[in-house]
Amino acid sequence: MVRSDIYGGCPVEISPREGVLMKVLVTGGAGFIGSHLVRQLMKAGDEVISLDNLSTGRKENLPSQAKLEVLDIHDEEVERLFSQEHFDAVVHLAGQTLVSDSMTDPQNDMYQNIAGTVHILECCRKYGVKRVIFSSSAATYGDVDEKALPIPETLPQLPLSFYGLSKMTVEKYLALYQQVFGIHYVVLRFSNVYGERQGNGGEGGVISIFAKALAQGKGITIYGDGNQTRDFVYAGDIARGIRKALVTDNCDTCYNLSSETEINLNELVRIFSDIVGKKIVPEYGPAREGDINRSSLSNKKAQKKLLWKPEMSLEEGLKKTYEYFLK
Ligand SMILES: NC(=O)c1ccc[n+]([C@@H]2O[C@H](COP(=O)([O-])OP(=O)(O)OC[C@H]3O[C@@H](n4cnc5c(N)ncnc54)[C@H](O)[C@@H]3O)[C@@H](O)[C@H]2O)c1
View 1 (cartoon, helix red, strand yellow):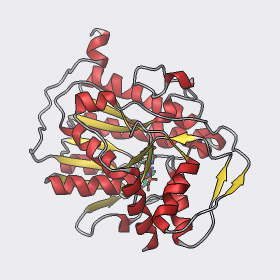
View 2 (cartoon, rainbow, N blue to C red):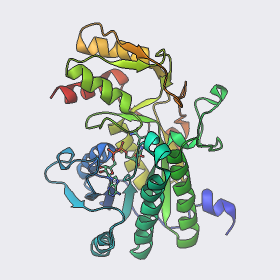
View 3 (cartoon, rainbow, N blue to C red):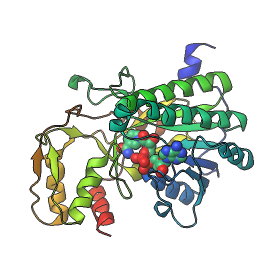
């Protein structure tokens, strides 16, 4: 098979189409992004089962009628689930999500994010899953020259963390599983995701940390001068992008999902001041080692080929997030 068949070709007949009911497994479905995705898939009429070990996720993140299998992605029981349910597609979100933990324990990061994923892919292969959607990350690009911003998908991946490396490695596994076994896949590289039900860790954490502290009447701290920028994208928009990837008949295999806007942390605090209705004066601490200065992913390709674009304004999304933590 020639290389273009692996990366740009469309080697399998993809049956799901917009409006057609699909049976989908969401690993990590009880987590932050999973909880947004499961709601949207159920609303679209898909049959959805979540698989989650509840290590950071919570049952309460899901609507009461959602189906949840409390399992670890490494468990042998996972195979039973695949053999019984005959999923059309799998959205793989479960894994180790902390860059910092990957630096202190690269072996666990590898076990969760690479070995765990290969187990899921083996189940997909054995039980005829047609498509896998994978949650990759901006962390696979590493620290990029500011001239290259917003980062396109074509930029070489040079991860600086084991987390970024494990995500990039899974991308390569997916390409080879497609080439060898014909399982179609779509890699989605998210920027900093935020919204209701986000935990304190993860990559988009700063918004949930600020929103939670403010909702509890506590102060907030910015590490560094606050001029560092991030590309924040609302979790509901990410969930919409994942569903687009589930049903697209475009054969491309990799997209950034981002807002393609750069907001600095001082500006973020200003927007929070408007939402809370009083001027918030943050404390400033020393810049954290390894923090990148500017970050933004191009979303042009997703706009053109997935027909996706983010719809939630940062002001509205922050308001929803703050109100969630108030409750
Ligand atoms: N939040 C972001 O900004 C962001 C950015 C880029 C990529 N991602 C990726 O998106 C995915 C979802 O992230 P999230 O922010 O919703 O994090 P999350 O921690 O809320 O969700 C992960 C879910 O997976 C479950 N899980 C973890 N290990 C498991 C295992 N071994 N077996 C079964 N379940 C397991 C957790 O209990 C949790 O419910 C992750 O793969 C993450 O790396 C997130």
